Length: 250
Image 1 (spheres, rainbow, N blue to C red):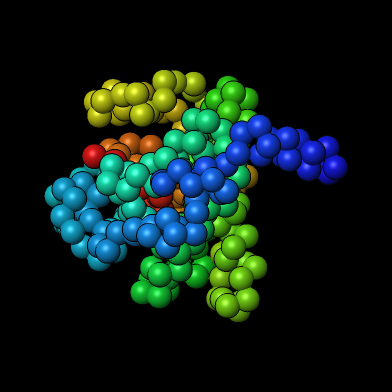
Image 2: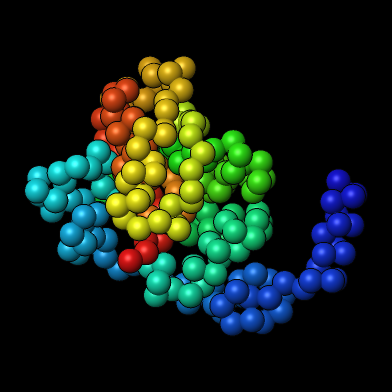
């Protein structure tokens, strides 16, 4: 504990934190920029991107080829410089403490949506998996860390009383095949890159059957990763799957 405190003090001394939006010294996100954080006012169809309230597919034509049921997005990756910088530093520069700020964004969007979709109050969170080689390289699974912090916020905020006491989290997906990161690939390549790479830990079979699941990830663009995870979860009996992500790219 003392060693960690000394290490953090030295890091702050040698590399002082600056706001990732405006550059002000002090924290990774200053209070002023945090207040300006822009959440999406509307969700959209995951396929055609037509605006709607809760991220459902427009119709069966739009839904064709997809295994999840809806997608809830906090912000725009391309239009929100703060969320983009936070995710980049968290995911690619391995700044783990940013997970607390990002999980707070997920919490805000989750709690808002839970007012209109009662199933959210008894949902099961499932983090998107990463391969063990990438886990060793990065040191953490960003989706799992976000999921853990989100669950902590929901369970320990006295303002929620017992509203989310039945929300659970199961790390039940496994990434078996190592492949190129999705961010580096075009749509057709992403589809091929992930096909068959996600497996299910069958110890959790009875725990997800007929349940309302929420897949947690940082960024969705083509939704290939969420869809491949959802395909596996639906095969093992999941009733409804909602993707919950920080941002969506173009």
